[in-house]
Length: 274
Ligand code: SF4
Image (cartoon, rainbow, N blue to C red):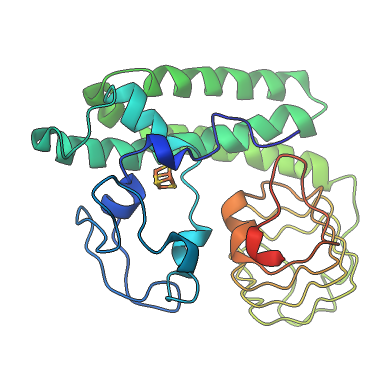
């Protein structure tokens, strides 16, 4: 299995929405400050990136990590029917607002797609299907309907379902080290720079954990809940994240790995891993 087309960013069919609608602050990930709704100075007139092949050395590694979950082309080609914000400047504000909503909706769809693959409970699989259908109906609507969507309510329903499935899946594994590791392997834990190499971490709940530059080399992360975990610079060389829960392409892009890192079938090995 590879990334489903619905989630694969198609930048050639997008009006550079991430490079315009979103703002970013000067940091290790971005070389400049850029306000939301302002075009990136590196954007060309045809919406391509003038430094695409040099983003990392030019200080824009954040751009190489970002993943819109396929929202960009849906907003550009489906919802706004191929008319760009430069062709119709009056649509600009609406298009950027819609993009921010659709990106969240596509992110939810991404997580929901994993539910039937992991749960043994047909009711949970059906709940994921129903939620996905509701979300797809919203993204198939017009711009006004999209921005009216009750994203918070949907977030809550998706979150509840993901948590139930996480408990179900993790319940069949025993997490090692949760008592002995300083700080604990728990949701939201600050594990930045933590030494977790060559460990069997199976079944740990690390949702929302800070794993920046954590050393996970050679570790087994089967059934580890990584929902929203910060994996920037995490060392995944020779690690097994193929059965981790709720791992996204953006998290993988932000981490370091190698050819021996085992990744989920629906994700792609980041180009910078070599
Ligand atoms: S919003 Fe998505 S499809 Fe559009 S340019 Fe950015 S990554 Fe590519």
